Length: 361
Image (cartoon, rainbow, N blue to C red):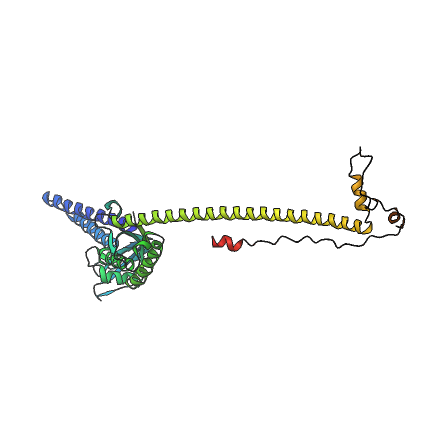
């Protein structure tokens, strides 16, 4: 109980005392006794009651989340709103209206349990002509000082006050205007956050001149027509199938590229092996040629060594030279050096560029 309530109780007690004094006066008069005591009691009680009542009416107690708008009936002007605490007003001259300055919320939803009996969802159309239904909650608070006077002056006589006269129609109009600048598919996806931010920006700009501070705006739900939802779902299914096809094609291309690279490496290895074998054979021929050049009888020697072990006699034509030319062997000195024969070069297998082939696939 605040101090104003205490004075009201004291006023009630004073009036009761006054009534008791009146009763005493009536009783004393009926018994032909002095009525002075009853008159004093009645006058004192009534006087105390009136004074306490005036004090209780003149004390204005404003809570911490409230502000008081004071209208002076003599000047016809709105005074500076009273802040939280106790202040004095003149009963009958200064008329007080209490306004909350804490945060408030206003919800418009198709569900009466969320928005209340008078709340309904906002129906709008996107820029591409699709119908959308938006459930919206706006969190706001009233400005202090002169902002409260503006609200009281403009909306105190309206049915529903500033809530139904200002907040509700402003939100509905702003949401429709913002939704008309977005495509329905964008609202269905990531564009919903952008739409919410734009609604909050516009509401802040519009309502600030009317003493309303927008704290936040929340798009609770967006409902689309069944045809639009079916079209969006069909498009998403198509995109998913296309993405799977692209992934499969990429996998097959990668496998084909890997097989081609492996085949190229195998062919390069076979080519390198062939070149190495050819180089080895060429080197062998070079050494044989070098020794034959140094000792022509080597062919005859090799021929003899290749004969079977059981051959003891060989017949040759009478006009053929001896298999061994003894002089050729005896004339060779220790310092004999066979002629140099150039060593064969092993060519390198050229690299195959598979980048272009892989990308062209």
